[in-house]
Length: 266
Image (cartoon, rainbow, N blue to C red; front, side):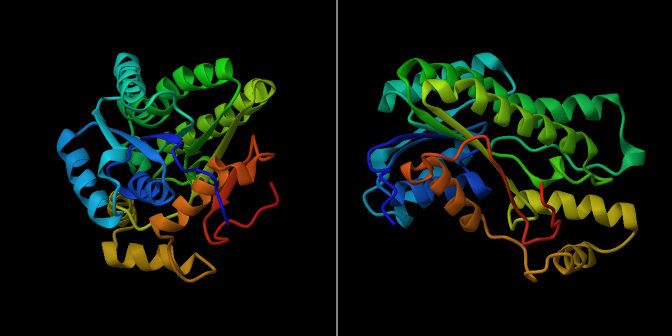
């Protein structure tokens, strides 16, 4: 299937690891130019080396910018840097930030604030800037990689789940607001996925249930009818489709990818 992503400028927040990195590799393989934003310059440089080795001829199509997206000025500087490198952004993939999973008895006011800063504002600060520019140009696609915790309440993921739920609403609302201007906005809700972030969730579950991390992983896997957790590359494949012209009439969608662990109609 031709996705028509060649030479598109794709800005990926959180692109140095996990699902964001898998998205970067997939877009580069399609011939896109990719700007990666992450807090750590070291992690970004490591990602560039891995991507260059994985996707032949991609080194000159990768731009890096280190920024803390909890700061709106950081988001603004990152966008300006990306535009200076590759021009206007055609596709935005938000995958930066993760709220710490915390057993309910360990929660406090700061934990709730930290979760919104880490997950909600890291997305919204970049989204708000990019969607307006896309609207002014009359075209663009945005995919927010959110998380299933915004639909199904988890005792160890309440602050992060609340941030995810807010991001789902923002995704649908922006799709309605900017659809008349030619901009599509969608969200993907992965379930448990084999990334570094998975480990923190397993640790929190193990503490809450007084079990080992290995048993926490086994329990998580048993809940999935497909019998396994997702791979980052599988999530990236869906992100690519939603960002491409093949999904030209798909907007305002929140797509759950959890192997039917939480089967529901809406």
